[in-house]
Image (cartoon, rainbow, N blue to C red; front, side):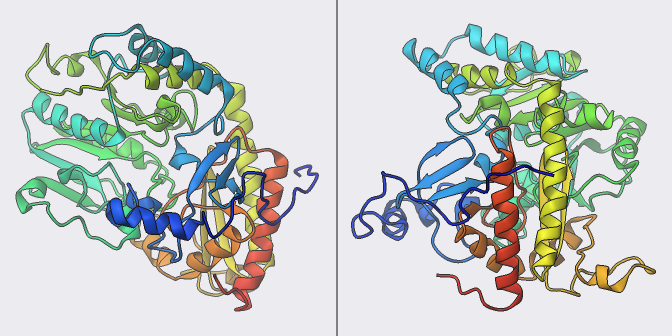
Length: 467
C-alpha cells in the first residue's frame, strides 16, 4: 500500500499563471504552427492521436510539469524516458552549469566523454567500447552500418512495432509515432532504402540465412505500448544469429540504464554484439551511444572502413549531465523503482476497472504500460476464467498486431483527456509507455490512481466531454 497525504486531484495553478487572453496553450500552439512544421518538433508530442491542443511547457520540477497557463501536471512522460531523477534535479542542473561555464562545444576530445564512456562500459557486461553520438536515431543508424561493414552483408531483420529511430532503413514496421499516426513507414523513403530490411513479428524467432548482417530488436518492446519478450524469445534470437554469423543488436535507448544498471542485457541475461543507448545517459540533453565488442567497434573510422562522425558527438554538457545521473543511481535505487512501479501498476489496474473500464496495466522493471478498452472488448481470454473478471481484463498483447488492435479501440483518447483534466499527464498516444521515476512519490502515484478511477467512471458512463 502507498501512504499518501492525498495531494489535490485537480490541476493546480501557481503564481506564474498569466492571463488566458495573453498566454494560453491554444495561443502558443497557434503561434507554433506558423513557424514550426506541424506545430511540433517531434510528431509524438502532437495530440494527433488523442485530439485537442497540446499543452505548452514552461518548466518542470521533479515529477511535475507546468504549462503556460500555470497548470501543474503529474508527469508520466518524463521526456519519453530521458529523465530518470526528475525534472531540474539539482545534481544534473549543477553539472550542466559547471560544464557550460567552461564552454558548450569544442570539436575536440574531452575528459567528459571519456568519463561517460567508462561509466557505460563499466556497467554493461560485454560492452567493451562505445562511440558517442547525439541521438538514439544516430546510434541505431550507425549500428546497422557497422554491422553491414563488419559482416560484409546487407540484409537487416527488425521486428514489427519496434522503433529504432527515423533512419530510412529502420522505419518499416515502426512503432511509436509511426504507429500513432497510422503510417506504414514514411513518404520520401525510396524502395531501395528498405529493400534489404525484413520485418518479422515480435516474439517469434525468425529464420535467418547467411545474407543477414544483423537482427535489431528492442529487448523490451516499448514503442507499441509495453510488450514483454516471451520466455525464450531473446535467447532464441541470439542462437539464430550465432547459427548464421549475424550480429545481434539490442536497441536499449529506452531500457538502457532504466531497467537496471546493466540494462536489458543484464536483466534477461542475453548478451548482444552491439548496443544502442540514449535518453538516460544524457540526463535530458541530446545524446546517444553505439557500443559493443572491441573487435567490432574497431571497424569504425578512423581505425576502420566504416565511416561515422558528428560535430556535436560527446557534447560536454550532455556528457556531464549523463554522468551525473549514472553516478546517482545504484542497484538499490533500481530495486526501489521497480517495486514501486509494480505496485503502481496493480493499483492502477484496480482503480480503472472499479471505475467501469476494462484495463490491464503491466510493469517491466520501472516501465509501465497501460491498456484500456470497453468492458468485454479485451480481445479474448483464456478459457475457464471468471467471466466477470475477464470482462474487465485486457489480454496483454504479444506483438504489434495485437497491440494495435487495442490501441485503435478509441478508449485511450477519452481516458487520456479525462486524466489530463485532473492534472495527470500521460503520453498523447496509445503506443507509448509511462515512465514513473525516482522523483515520483507515493503521494504522486496515489493522485494518479485516484484520478484514474474518476476518469474511468466518466469515460465508461459516457459522461466525459473533452474541452
